Length: 469
Image (tube, rainbow, N blue to C red; front, top):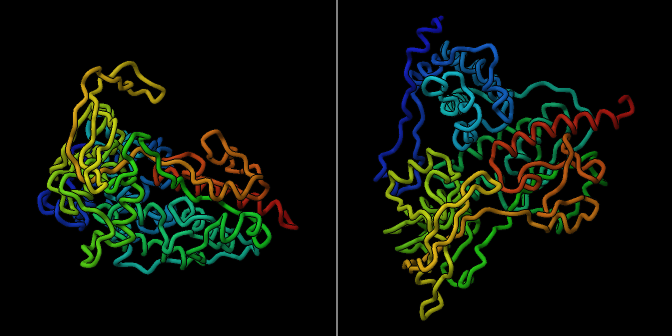
């Protein structure tokens, strides 16, 4: 057992990753993971502090110090049992969760240096378990209750796994032809390989979760239909309606929402360089508008699809970008161009109806807005044109009204999101909700946190409904 002083002397390890120039031309995963030796060394940096702030900083309440101590002791199987019990999708969150603002953001080691690389260690354990262990299915007594889950994204998959472990029969309905939601159609292969999603969904199915795809709740079936056959419903259909710039030219050929762009690449196979009719316009000069993680995904994807210039245009400065620091860093290494303090005014058309350029205006930062970031202000007389043959709008998403329009009993807020109380209960008895359909566009881990919390509320609700409850 290392002393606290010995642990503090260990420097944070480095993640192995593909060469930047090489990876900018392929869709193979950028980060290559930790070796067992590096994982043990990094886990030994955890000082096992009494207050365990990392646990409270984790939306799904993973017992982080416990699984780190197992790694430090070379007990990877023990670490895996803890992690797989606490987190339905650990190999996913180990790759895409913004740990730097959550568990690592409150790590005591970060006060006088770098925090423990919790995310990297989570990924290591999940990957090790997938290769070296049979997924352990706990013996649980059936409750006799059935729960329908709308959406096979991170929130829906999490609530499904939690409820299955509680003994409830869970049936997940997914509108698309495959599972994962944003994990599959939104996040590129080079950040989250599809095999990872497949493996984690397979584990949930081993728990007894049933998944049915190609079912659109609000069209194929309604919430009212589900309530006839199930004891409770959890709605986690995300916020899949893209936001646009509302400027002239957005209807031109070669202009995509980030949703459409990434979905065509992920689900329609553009990343596999399909030899037939390409499912997307690749472009030599691609401009992506936005500064979040989706914008980074889109612009880095454009580079991999062969763009000679892949440009991120953002109306604030780099300091205000909401994207993860790691994603921005990787983009810079890969040759992505950043144009800060610019806002699009119009997309211009060529003779064939394709976008040929964007007219931009320079900006300057004023006083902070409601988000706490300084508000961008237009600089008069600063308009200019930038050539492009593909433009991608990555400004965020709002709730798709298909389900809620068919369910008038569910209360919505002014943005069209479902209103819930602290227990994730909606205004419709027996119906719960979480994730982006409640929050608006947020992160994978926050949707998962909602799923975990909602599972406890649904369990309480079902127990109260039972004859012995």
